Length: 386
Image 1 (cartoon, rainbow, N blue to C red):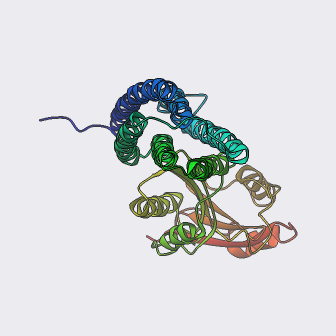
Image 2: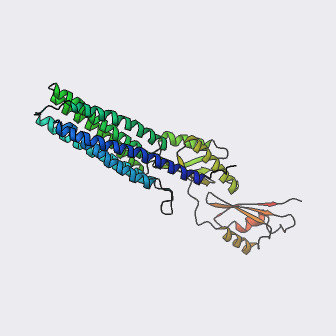
Image 3: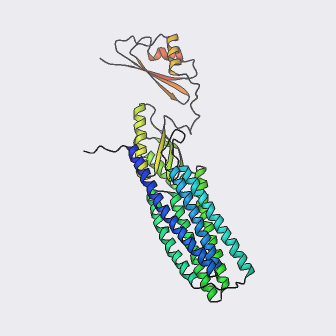
């Protein structure tokens, strides 16, 4: 019988599989970009098409971005370590930021060049028909690699791979511009070529800006949407044992979500019951969003937002036992003292065995001895029955 796989081992296997899939699709795209770039640069030079020549340069920028993706994916998919306990996914975010910046730069360069052509006007030579063939082949190849790369990116939940897929589609857009411009030039409408090039360049800039801005928001720890935040709060509030949720903070690392949540529970429950309630909340939230990587829950006995925080200057257990010993005497050996820190007061519960001396440690006596202490709230004494 095969032994079950531990969560840590399963996580490592998932990372290895994701890295392999990302590398494979990126290498395929890089080879395609290189081949198309060579064809378009040579074709543009031989058949008098400046648009095809620029489109070929655009393809070589795809090769450069593919190299960036390969390097970033290798680093970002490493396991957490002592210096990076939450993992290395932010490196993927930074890679997406770089890739978006490349798109903006390429789009701006294309827009500037074609705007100058539009202003200056006049094209001396008409491109040859092989330019149409090269552009059509580029459109077909880049649309295929776009769909393939995007499918892999969604499957392994990688924003960087998805961004690279859209980068491939911008190259297809550029090739469409070449098709339109070449047909327009052949029909005598040279301005249509240049105008379409400027429009597509604007689309490239828009896509690059979207990826860049989304990455910036993630790097500055932008939280989940209001709708997702309210949904998670509702899940917590509906969990048995939770009285309220007074704080929920979220942030992203790559595709993963990290959460911090404060749960208000009844103050008299045990530590273990409070922890169990927190684990039930975690389970419900993971069922709602499968890309939650880590949930750090804090159990509160009272809502800190409705009143001042409990002061750290309140006496500790050792301090209170020493005060009781000073006024009454040492607590019986088998007794148990439970403390509740609520509303900046300390409330005592003392549990005694039946055979132990109870007179000195009666509720009335303890209350009398501690009444002048500003931190004292209340006291209850419980005696075990026969």
